[in-house]
Image 1: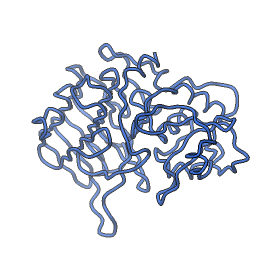
Image 2: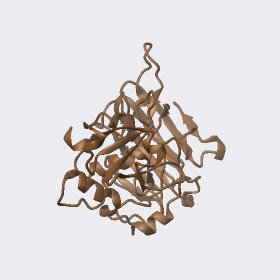
Image 3: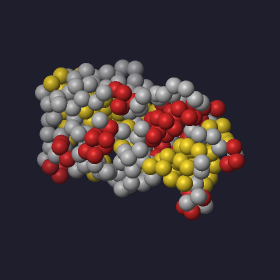
Image 4: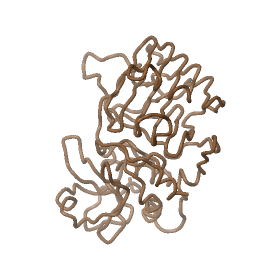
Length: 334
């Protein structure tokens, strides 16, 4: 099942573990994470295709949150009568009258609805903005293949909670963009002809061995999954921090979907004391390390390297990693 689905996935994304600006009530972003369309208050129809990609009848925002009416995505494949996302947290968040291909769909928070071989919809998904805490996106559609009529890698984000926050005169109001993961979230199984067993989505959490050894065995299940900027699941692909976050979520250890933050989410480990499961960090910058992987022993690690590549095993002896090594963290020993 995993190999068949992997073959159907389209490689998309760039900006390895990087960040961009998050703004607007709704957004359309391309496979590289670049903003294609940014919808504000009132009605909206995506200009490039007369609203086929994304349109809504009305939208407003206030200190309470973001509200949209009559939301249509991918030519009406996904439709919601109303979306409301509070400015803070999930309490009171709701998506009413949600249908996919004319069929009513449950709109519980973090529900995942498969839309095609590599495409999916996530409902009321919690987001993480480094340095700003968490927020919520009402609907997030990821086109991982061409079956929706969208360019593979396109993401539609509707009801951005962070957009409801009033501007601050004391700092830059452009918050860091970080694409969102679906690790550990519920699955609407059996939509149409596309059923994704929960075991595939979450991976079989192995028993026996140390926490780190179990993390390695989980990570090995995803070898060959394509890299995707902002990716944090085996359906759409992984970026480096998305892979580590997804793996450790299955062991009950929450990590932020941001490499620079994960560098501080555990016990610092000297290079001569590395154990399987330790997180290895590379490529220093002013925003912290920009790449990471999971140590598996013997001087090797599993990681999602960059656009055009897949989750694979590399060696610490490779010059790019040997000279770019920043440090290691043991997330289960925080």
